[in-house]
Each structure stands twice: as structure tokens, then as C-alpha cells.
Image 1 (cartoon, rainbow, N blue to C red):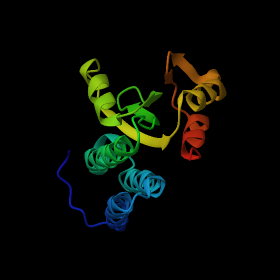
Image 2: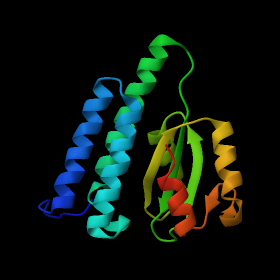
Image 3: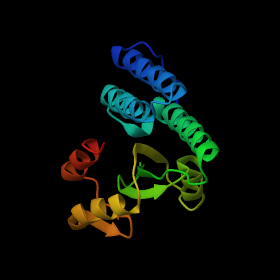
Length: 164
């Protein structure tokens, strides 16, 4: 995480969105929490114009992992089946994105970082299962690089921004 002054309007708005995400998660509003994190990332990236220098990258990933953990613990208490999340992770060096599913995105990111020397940033996460993931992969087939990795361009960015 870089040392930057958090004084810009975008920074304040991003912090407010992250605070809202934690609050929403505390009340079980997981969908609202995930949307707030996504919006906080967009605001912060728009302000800095660079996901690599995004001061909120680490913080928002930590908040997301916290929310995912809360969700997983709550669901485990109710049943043995944990929810799946569709995640979009970007390689900051190549700008390519990986779209996949995981029950615990925090663990998934750690696993991916083990085999990747480049910085990885969580861009988006939404509730979803393997069927929805396959649909997304099919919709973005023209931009597939290899496996679950896709070329980053305006079409992919627009598609990801519209995921809910």
C-alpha cells in the first residue's frame, strides 16, 4: 500500500463507501456491501487513475474478505453449504483479468498470488455460481486469453461494471 494523503473528494467518498460496506455487512446486507466496495474501488481508481497506486486496493480487498468471511460464517451456522462468489481479479502489470468462482475470495487471492510475481487487484465480486461463471466466460469468449484469463478492454470493462 502506498503512502498517500487521503484528502481528495474521491478519497473521502471511497472511505464513506467502505464504511457503508462494513455497516451493511454487519446487518446482513451482503449484496449492498459488495456493491459499496465496488463503487469505492471505482471512485478511488477514477481519482488516482491507476489501480497499481490505488491506496484502497489493499483496504477494499481486506473489507471484502471480512464481508465474505462474515457471510460464510453466517451461512455455515444455518447450513453446511457456503455461497459462491464470482470474482474478477486484475494483473496490474499485464492488465489481463481472471474471472472465476470461489467460496472464500481471500484464500483464492492468496493462492493466485503464490504463483504470480505481479500485483493482483480484486476489481469486482458478486454472488454467483459455476453456471453464472460459465455464462460470463461464454459472453466474453472473444476476449479470452487462456483458461479463465481475459484481455482487458472497454468491452470487458463495461461487462464487468454491469455485473450485479
